[in-house]
Amino acid sequence: MVARDGMFRIAAEGLVGGAIATKVMDPITVFMYEHEDPAARRREDEARQGEHVYDVAARRIDRALGLGLSAEARRRFGWALHWGITLGAGVTYAWLRRRWPAARRLHGAAFGLGFEVVADQVLVTAFGLAARPTAYPWQTHARGVVAHVAYGLTIESVLGAFDRLEARAGA
Image (cartoon, rainbow, N blue to C red; front, side, top):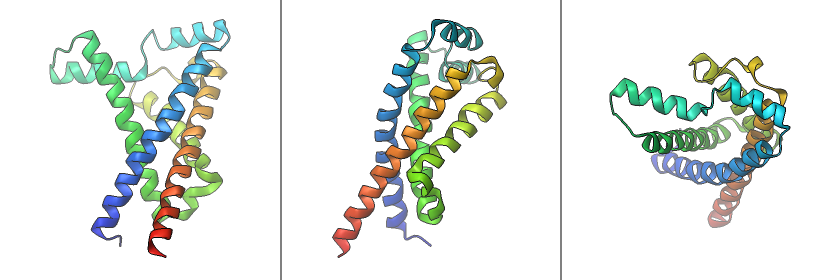
């Protein structure tokens, strides 16, 4: 059992790692999208009907709760949902790698790939936030794999650095 301060440390490290990993992942995603074949971009834009999955989620939550958010507030809310998911994934990974060291396989790349499959390929479709995966061009999926693997590699690097600092402090 992890001590209470241990759980706080794991959560804090996961939040920091998740934030840094997101700051690495997001520009990769944007760069790859901006440099895609125009036909692939059009196909993706048609599949998502001009809305990013987080915008769809924000709109649905806004309607369900009757918040009456402006378009700009919904866009910011969607961005906050994106950050909430990536930070939550950071805390999840920090906890997993402590409890199950095999989660660190491939220096976090396996977690990143799993995050891509579960979140972007299964859950968003299951919740009706995106079209079926087959509606998107292969470039969309490749971008997701590259970006999420970068997330996993980055968060493992950050958490590994925390481990080394902790080991030095305890030595």
